[in-house]
Image (cartoon, rainbow, N blue to C red):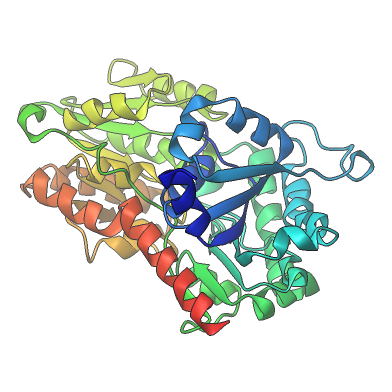
Length: 419
């Protein structure tokens, strides 16, 4: 037996489920990959994911290199129970059923579970999706889990009616699940530990923070993907380059940023990196406000390229009403100050007290108030003279993947001792 094989066999085994794991194609998949590659250093992982996702992972040399001790199993709902699913169409009901029923595939495979120490449900964006994992008779960790709160009406004034209705309906369905779904109620009761993305999750799921649940954001950063202090080039004092990178979706609030730009001097420009359904309407807004020469739309670029882009910017704008959002954390690790909105259901707002470089505008109560406050906050943030190295170091200290995985590993060990 080789030394590697001997070390591998000595590792305890866990069963981990993740609807999405990717090499960076999606934020959820990227988070799952970074946790997997670190958790697999201490544990042999049996990963359950969707079949087409399994095929992509096994065909990717980068995944096998990053996670050599992860065995991947594909699971999908039977065709008769998912014929209505096509691409992104009806994603939520399919994902709900997938999270709920995948444990049934192991009910008749008890021998496969004989050496499994615990089950970890990685489910980042949908804390209203329950699981029947308790049927396996193994300790269950659930999370980090999260959700986005309902965006206020003034934010949705720019959205198409269909997008606003879908957003409202989705939140209503979640609210019904949080309060009436018996499967969700039982998932909460039977989980050994719940990792909640923020106090808004604890409030909506009616959890009691303590031994059963702890707060832990799913956001993380790679320490190697930060700026090189020797190559740091900020815009000169006369010109200010504002940056956004991410999906151009309605909830991101880029319309508010563009309207705020219209209230700033011509020396402020805005570079937007990304694609998404809101792009045509955002471009029309730019044209209507006469800002075509000051706003640049660019397709998505790699994270490595973004490091250089952030290092040459003045501010990163994150006007989103999301509870989390990964891009602003990555910007901070490049020493780039971030401007966003305050809020009781925002990781960005929570982090302001412990990190440098975060500047928050008033969150309403009207669209006019929010846009004006955002413009004023951008101007005041330009004067942020904090050393970018300090901004970077604090962000890494709070959000590094190593720190995240260490917290989860400690939870694993604690549960192993209890059971």
